Structure formats: C-alpha cells, structure tokens
Amino acid sequence: MTSSKDSTGGHRKRLRERFLKGELDGFADYEVIELLLSLGTPRKDVKPQAKEALKRFKTLRGVLSARPEELQQINGIGPHSVFGILLVQAVAREFLKERILDKHVYQSAQEIFDYLYHSMRDLKNEVFKVIYLTGNNQIIDTVDLFEGTVTGGAVVPRQVMESALEKHAASLIFVHNHPSGDCEPSKSDKELTRDLVFAGSVLGIKVLDHIIIGNDKYYSFAGEGLLVQYELDYLGLRMKGVSEAKRKFYQANVTGEDKWKQGSTK
Image 1 (cartoon, one colour):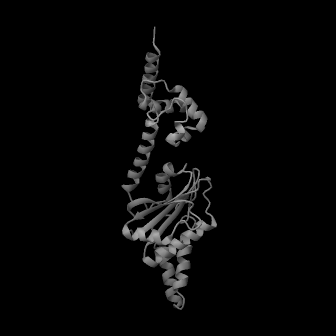
Image 2 (cartoon, helix red, strand yellow; image 1 turned 90 degrees about the horizontal axis):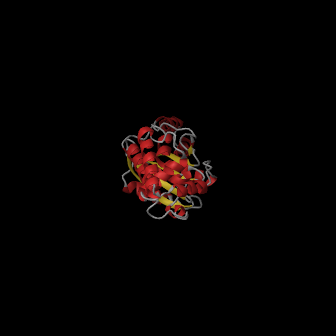
Image 3 (tube, one colour; image 1 turned 60 degrees about the vertical axis):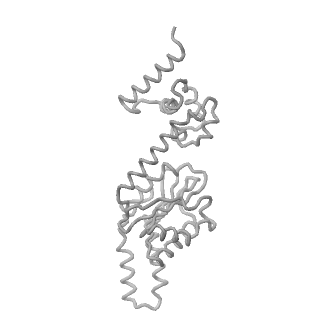
C-alpha cells in the first residue's frame, strides 16, 4: 500500500524532472507555486496551498509579489513554506541589479524600467529612488531616498542634491512608482522634476531622466522631451541680459549634448 508521503514524494519528483527537461514549459501556474513552496517544506503536500494562493492573488505574478505575511494568511503556509517564494524574489532582484551594474545605462529608459519594475510594481506606497551615475553614465549606487507620497513636498531637492554630492555623482536618474498603476505624471510630479533639474543645473549635476513606473508601463520625462524643456527654462533665467548669439550657443549645447537615448512611454 502506498503511503501519502510516498505519493507526495513521487509527485514532487515528477515535477522536478519535468522542470529539468523543459523548464516551465507546460507547467500550470499552481504547479510553479507548488514547486516553490516545497523548497521550504519538502515532505509536505502543498498543492492545496498552491491552488489557494493562486485563487487569492489571482495570478502567478500576484503570488510571487505577495508579502510573506499575506501568504501566511493561507492555512498551511507558514514561515518555512514561503522560503522558496522569497528566494526567487531576491534572486530576481539581484540578477537584474547585477546585469545593469555591469553596463552603461545611457541606452534607454527601458533598461531602467526592466531593472526596477520587478521590485516596484506592487508597492503599496510611493517610493522615490535616485540612481547615481559617473560622468560615463556608469551606476554608482541606487538608493530609496523618500517613501510615502512623492507629492506634497515630501521630496526635498536640497536633500537629493546633497546625497548626489556625497556620492560624487555627475548625473542622476529619478524613479518613482504610482501604486494606482497609472504612470502619467501629475502636476506635482512635473513641478518636482523641474525643481530638480534647476537644482542640478546650479551644481553642474545633470538629470538624465525621471521615470514613473505604473502597471506594466512607464513614463519617461526624457523620452517626452520635458527635461530638455526644463533645462531651457533654466537657461532662460540665466541668460537674461546675455546676447542673442550666446543664448543660441547655450541652447544648442543643451539640446545637443544629451547622450541619454530617450526611451518612449511603454
């Protein structure tokens, strides 16, 4: 007579063999979740919990991005069971981080979106990240500088620039998320970005982009041409009383020096 443990072990073994042969081809979403849950509880049948998790969080992505305390609300999922899901989340973040740290990032806003989307798409609060870069557009560091509501004066340009000077950054990329999923910038988002461009211009620190992450899409201030407009606005303030020839020269530098290849909104 076959015991339930033997049955569970055989089922688990077959799932693993299927994965080794064809990775996730042909896997149902609940089977992927089952495999991950089994990493922390290898001798327990977790198929019912996997199906319940999928039912509660709607999609595989929803399960993989759920917080541990949310997963543990499901009967039968404890601290050990969530190990596999936490592991895959951490590995994915580290992989994307290492991939972009090893290369220049001036190519497009899409690269930044791919790098950060996994970790920011399901955040309940707005998080304002700053990516610090060298003069060659190599990433120095990525820091969560503010959390809560990006609008309403929560982000202080002075603090942003102080952090840039501490990091010896030559340029910056700003990224924040919209928990609503709508990546269109608000009036406050535009005013903040303009203030940051002005502050950076005073200190000789270039703002390469401000990217707003929504639900499977993003908005790039650089891609929409707003950063150049803000730089020209700043120059307009500086150039009062300057000859027209010099004014055109400076404007040409602003529009021509930008090596950041603008990414379009996705």
